[in-house]
Length: 220
Image 1 (cartoon, rainbow, N blue to C red):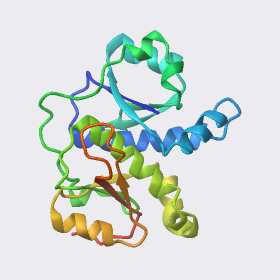
Image 2: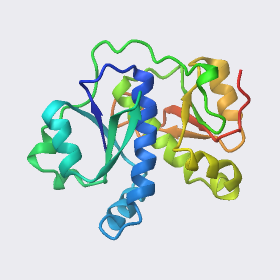
Image 3: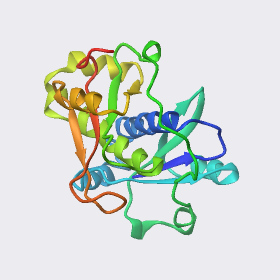
Image 4: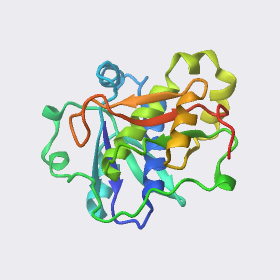
């Protein structure tokens, strides 16, 4: 799955990450069970939801939305990240091959979501403070985390927690990046932790992002 970040909008790293989570879920919910894309999503799911984050702006962003099936996540009312229907790299055309990796040079820190801005049924994400990652890498890791959590056995067994989250448009929030928060997130009932394959930036088996189900962790 290509997560394409609109790079000509002035948005914070946190907004990009949350828009990526939203886009990922919208793409799966709206497109995975359609006749045209069911096979692509099925094969992709069997390969552990692999993703890559790239960027586009201006006419390239407009062409992407016009010609390639996918779904968007937004920030401040504007589409910011588009999750495309999964595809093999070998099936990419010249346009997609030409999109550059999303890796802003000086993005600033990834700030946690303010407590008063967290929706009642939000899924929460904690990033491992001991594993440095670029924003582009973190985009993909958050995309992994939201899907693993939303499709987990815990999610299937607890529709009362996950149904409001889906009905409200997949609200998500970022927790502080510190050791205590990381431990609390991992200890929450139903939480899932992404273990990266180590293809880029981090060593194989690194724990990168933990997703906490809606309502499973008290706010503090």
